[in-house]
Image (cartoon, rainbow, N blue to C red; front, side, top):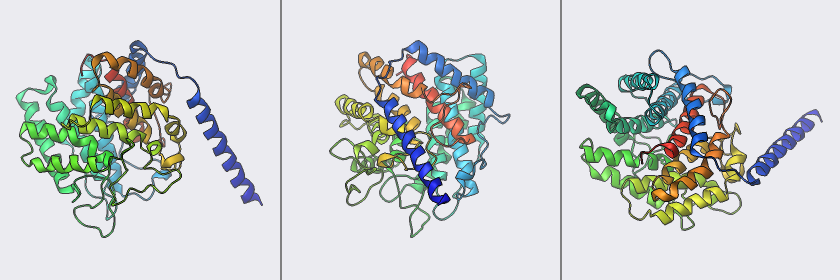
Length: 386
């Protein structure tokens, strides 16, 4: 009886929390201008500046919550590496001050000297997540005028080539990347996801243009994989299966479970040269994002992945909002500010008084990654850069 009462109380609390989230999401959302966005972004940057470690990194790379049990020790290093890469990207995207410049250079020094992540065990291939974002951060740094000197250029290229070699080894037979593997386990993983693949497409294309990557087929296979995940309704499937896993009800591959994937996949394909991703298609994806946004709200801060409606997970939230901001930047300049003004309130609501942002469990690497996603998303709307 006691156990039943506890379960009923937990279920009631969860239901009330979801009702509250839906009510907040359904309420009219204010628009936020560039000045308020800059203030919020600067608070996030101050948090990251204060958190940077002596070696130039940000996250601690160890398990600090029991909710992360079951993963290999190496996975925590991979998550740390991805978070540190995002923090470097956030520092590079914000308004430069002497303090920001120093933090950026310390962060990049750590990144070019850090060892590549390793596979944790048979199924746990989270080292791909760290490799993906490290490679993205390094390719963006290679285009940054602050790192054009001979020494920096050589160090960045050397590190980028190491991560590129790792990604080539990890590219699945279908052409994509993911963070777990399915039996029968093999050295080259056989599972991939649309969003992991899409986020690295522009960086791969950049590597091709720079001469770091000679095999164009690596990019073409990845593009083809993401395109094959696209559904006629504008959604992208989580992964590629012979028949899309849509079996009625609240499924992750329906539009309401694909809101964040739509943004990163449209952006990744467009930025890597796919002319089929037009402004109209990007706009349609953004309209879906805001129309069904309450399903991301309901999932945010839930500690169990894919527990919310349409199998949304908390960590879809800031990831998706950052790539929505990047998708907005592909629209004609005159259209961008109105979209950013709609996006900003949803970003800013995740920010705490210390400046950090969160959408999932309160672990150290999540604090860094989420705060970096927030700063990056807000920077895109206030910067003069495309």
